[in-house]
Image (cartoon, rainbow, N blue to C red):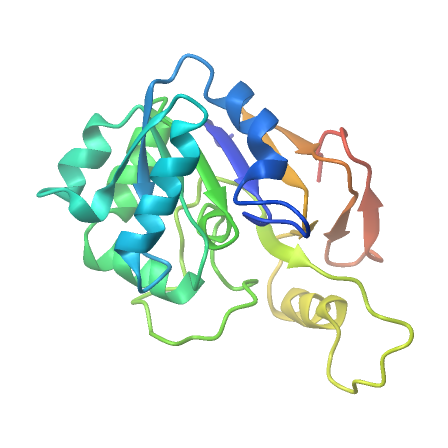
Length: 232
């Protein structure tokens, strides 16, 4: 059993709202008792701007937020953190930097030891076994597709349903994820925008107001209702 406390958010923004506004209630509940968190901005090129935005947003939740890229020793910062939040952007760039900085194993061990982990989009992707179900382009090449392995299933953030009125002839998101299952066995959770997954000591619950699309080898894709436990 994978143990740890995780909040994995599909997206940092939904239409008509600001940064993390839609997830504030879940975030507040998740980090209850936590006074500070460590932010990881590696998925975007503008780390300073990203860190400043996160610091301002979490300040409105009465949380102190420091960015790992401003730390003199990133591994030490992970070791001292109460909670960590890994922001969205490009998943390949994020994972490559985590490897380059030697942070994959330290983050994994700290979460197993009780540090709370939050991710949004790419930050949710890297919590899973691999990044094979990201939507992003491989703008850089990490040494491995293997990710943090904190969450037992693959995640596809920003999952979008086929548009019945579209004339686009490329694969739908569902078709691409079914292709993944032709070569891989780990189930995939298609996490629609506005939804998130919370894991506490192996129990996983779908949070938010929307259903999630579940993909398992040998089964037709099916819907998981909001508020339901994930049992695959």
